[in-house]
Amino acid sequence: MRKILATAAALAFTSQAAFAANIFVIGGKPDDPFWSIVKRGAEDAGKVVEAQGGKVTWLGPQNYDNLGVDAAELIRQAIDQHADAIVGPDWVPEAMDPAFKAVVAANIPLVVYNAGGLGAADRLGAMNYVGSDDYKGGVAAGEYLAKAGYKNGVCINTLPGAANIEAFCKGFADGESKGGGKSDALPLPATSFGSATAVAQAVKAYLLQHPDIDAVFTIGNVDANSAMNGITQAGKVGKVHLCGMNFDQTVLNNIKNGQQDCAIDQQGYLQGYLAVSILNSHANYGMSVPTREILTGPGIVDKSNVDATLAGVQAGTR
View 1 (cartoon, rainbow, N blue to C red):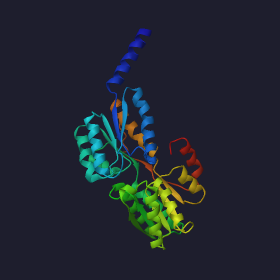
View 2: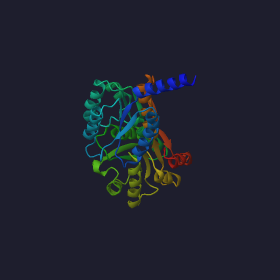
View 3: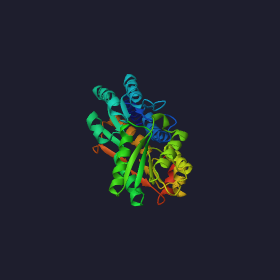
View 4: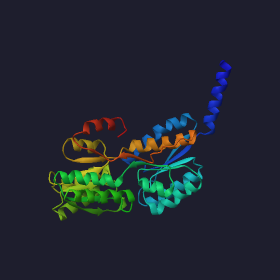
């Protein structure tokens, strides 16, 4: 009996090893706080991949100065390194779609996540889209601030040209409009993304030049913290209200203390975790998820639920 069980175990191990998945995940740069959470989700799902003899490899650009071209090159690197499956965001379709199409042409299973939506998954022939609806995330912020009475907004766009960021700002403008308000966009060079000084100075200058502005929307948590500094430097605390995509400990503390009104949550941990899990189960067992659009957001974090969200941040998953 023991011999039979040992033989069965050996066959099971051999079967797993034969289908061990080499999964590549394209994501943000290493020091980006939001993408570090996505990466953790991918790595946690990767523990199952590794237990089955496979591997998860993370590829990210060093900066966002030439985002679409650099990301497309990372996708091609994954193909060249014999990926069994690839996860990637469709940030800049004009630059990245040819590389994604090469993935599908090589019969490599693809999941689009974080940016691009179901439209990108359909266009590229991907299995699923996992992530938030970028446009709806912006709408949620615009509606939230307009409902609170702040109806003259500006979206601080530090990654102009990136499709998901443009969708954030378009959604914010439409959300403000639905609430009887209006919004413009302030595009800044991509080098300003994550630059506390550049964003703070730009926000300060814009607010001083446009005294009617009472609502600011940012496209990331680092920019939200910088925008808060700009609002303070302009002497507009309490007069200009802030909401932004994503969050960190500082953003949540600002919400709790009343300095920031809200943050839009897209649950980056789930984006990485679910995308890798879907492709691993497909590679090993031929499984698929029939719901091709798997939404992880948007959700709104404000004073009503900030304490529960802080607990997730302390655990490293929010």
